[in-house]
Structures are given as structure tokens and as C-alpha cells.
Image (cartoon, rainbow, N blue to C red; front, side, top):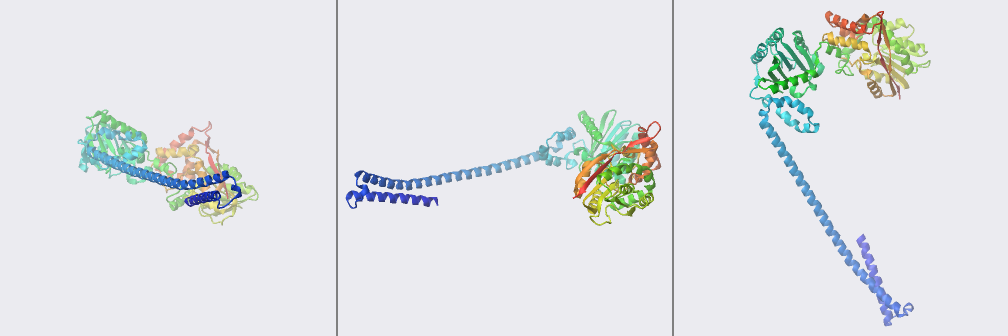
Length: 602
């Protein structure tokens, strides 16, 4: 379009110039007579102007053509340079890829070639090297490390040999134990017969070593964390060690440096005599290390690191963690069994609960009802109402209140204590009421006893009217609600490993953040979480243990499964802990704070 416009401009100038020249020549020759050109000067001026316009038109054509040609040439140069740069970049990229591939192959080849020459010191130092390595660099070298440690053959040196039979296993332990009486044997292994517990001879050899004055320490790696202790075979092996006098510790395998997961070694007279390591395919390898004192000390340092990361084995630890702890979760994996376990537990515990625990839990009533803004116009549903104390407190404010619970014994007590109020048998996770029914819903310490607490929150949301309020209370974490700390610590220290149906973490909602997340997820707005300071008043320090034993479902069930001897040990430790808070008259006031969380339905 621009080129066409330029041509029209050039043609106009050419026509104007030719017209001016023609007029001036015609007037000068007398062909025509124009009055405006009566003087000679205008005639010549017109002639010159016309000739100038013709020259300009001619020049414009030439200049435009030259400019176009130059621009085209410049474009060709730019395109050529760009293509050259692209070819150079592609060549550089290919060269870089080839170089990296060559380096990869060379490094892998060197590692494969030199793996047999890796010294025991290097293997022992590997965990520290990994800890000091930048994560980005570690990601690069990880395939090579895995290449080295894939099979025991990759790490065996000439001094190592495989223990491939029970006879070789016996021979190794005979030398380790019999040749070093009174020595110090330290080991790590997995708590299964497949990996370690090869024969009864090993048991007898270990027992003889300890009986002869030897010191034996063993760290058992738990492949599945504390859940490993729920396996009867694993627990039997660990308990057998403890009964023989072995100093047993346990460590979640995910917390230990990978190269140290499976190794053990023996020491006598302060110096190590034997070292053995289980390879990634679980074959056992062993060799003497006394000739190399650097290696000997390094192995001891490695074991110290592992031992410091582990925790002393306590048979009741896994039992205590069934109530709450690092391995607990927010939802039961056995909902039917857990629900029935809780129902039977509360059937048994209801009378003691009403006498001992109810005076403590009803201290939250006013705070809960204030959070729900209960008055004479409020319709309230008390879910997991227990003996009905909160239901009655709402009725005392003039509200219309009803209570529901899944335990018949609790409902019987509620009706006896509060005649005239309505109580019914319903589960918190499946309420029989229609949607948008109540102005307020409360769960006072009941959320701890349902297999899926968040399902109970959703049910509460469903039966609330829009704008209705919901509140629940739970116990604070054991570090604050100290009676729980006393009882669970005593179970961990003195108890036996017993099993109850898997339930949610008893203290999951003792953390404010978890309360906010759960309520918001259920749909509630204006969520708030506050701490309530409660005091549990008991007649004496000896009243704490029976309150848990006979007045609770989950912890009570855990305690009642212990042997009489274990129960007595637990009782003694709880009594000793409680005596520290007893007053001069023997009475006891225990801090038992609770957490109150509440919100509004949109």
C-alpha cells in the first residue's frame, strides 16, 4: 500500500512539472497568451519550477528503488545471522549433552570399576558425607550411590565373608561371644527371625554372654515406626532381649542414615574386635576391624550416633501411643471395632465417670453455653451428652434442650439425674434429626470418643439452622492436662504391650490449629478457639489411677488388659507423680485445662 501511494505521488509531481513546462514554453513561443505570464520573469520561473518537479519525480523513483533494495539486503543479512546463531546454539547444546553423557558414563564406569576398592573408612564416613552434601548435589550423585550399595558384593572387601547358613551364624557368634567374655557387644538389627533371630543357639549364646558379665546393647530398627511393635513376632524378639538383660533401644528406620540400617559389631576390653553389616539384600557380611584402629573408632562413633537417635525400649510405649502420640491419626482404621470398644467401655465406666469425672467436665458448661449464646429462645442439641449435665445447664437458662448419646448406661444416668429432659440413643456421626433443626449444637468432651470426629462435625453442621452456633470441648495436650501425662508416661515406662482397637489421636484437637482447620473444613465461619482452665479436685493422690482405670473407656481398657504386676507398677508411678501436687492434708488439685472451639454456620 505504501509503495502504491509513493507511485501516485511520483506521478502527480511528474504531471505537474510537465504541465508547468508546457505552459511556459507555449507562452514564450506565442502559441498561447496568458495574462499572468505577461512578464518574462514569471514565464522563466514557471519553466524552472516545472523542470524541477520533473527532476524530483524522476529522482524519487530511483531513491525508492534503492531504499527498497537496501532494506531487502539488510533483512537477508539479519535472517542469515539468526539462522547461524540457531545452528551454533543447537551445536553447542548437542555438544553439551554429549559431554554430560560422556561424563556420566565415565563417572559411572569409574565407580563400577573401583567399588571393590572402597575402604571401610569411606563406607563408615558416608553418613556424615551425605549430611554435609548440598541437596542439589546429592540428587546428582544419588544414582551412583545406589549403584554402589545395591548388593553386598559391591561393598565387600577381601576381609569380609558372608554368613549364608545357620552354622556360619553360630560360628560367628561363638567367636564374638565366647572369645570375648566380659566384653561389650553392640549391635543393630531388625526384629524378625528372617533377618537376625536365626536359631535358639543364638539366644543361648547371648544369654551366656550377658550372664558371664558381658555388656550387650542392641538397637532395633523399626521398618514401620511404632507400628512394628504391634507385630507379635517382633515384640516377642525384643522382649526376649530385654528379659536376658540386653540394653534394648528402638529407632524408626526412616530416621537412621541408610548405610547404617543393618550392621552390628562386638567389642572387648574397650576395643572393637568384630564388625558386621547387613547389605541391602539382607545378607550378613562380617570382617575383623582390629587391625585398623581408625575404622574401629569410626564404627563406635557410628553406633553412638544411632544409639543417641534411638529411645530406650519400653514395652508399654507402643501401648501408650495407641491413645495419642506421633504415630496416631485423626480417624480410626477400625471404626466398627472402635465404636463397640468405646460403647462397652462406657457401659462399664459410667457410674465412676459420673462420680469422679463429671464434677470436672461440667466446669466447662457456662463457657460452652456462652459461646453458643444460649437463652430462652434457643433450641440446643447436646451430642454425646453423657450424664446430661450440659443439657440440664442449657435448660436452666430457659432454652429447649435435648441430649443424645450412644451409651445406654450414660443415658440411664442422665434420665435419673435430670428427669423431665429429653434424652435419646443416637450416634454423633449419624444423627436422626433432619437438617436445619437446631439453633445450637454442642459436643462436650464427646468428640474424643467417635471413630471419625470430622464426620461428627459435618453432622452437627447439617442439623444446625443457618446462623446457628456449634461448640465442642476436648482435653488439652498431656503436657498441660497433667493427669494424662502421669498415666500415659506410667504405661510407657511400666506397662506391657497390649492392643486396643485403633482409634483417633485422643489429643488431636488439643491443638488449636487442628480445631480451626476441622471447623473450617466442615463449613463453619467465625471460628474461635480458647483455653479453659479447669481444676480436678480429688481426695488424695491415690485417687488418680482408679479414676482412669474404672472411670474411662479407652485408657481404662488399656489399663485393664495389663497383667496385675504391670497394673501395680503403673499405679505406683502414677501415685508418686500425683504426690508431688498433694497438699498438706493429702488432698489433690490437678490442673486439667481444656480447649473450647466454636463457630457459626453460614
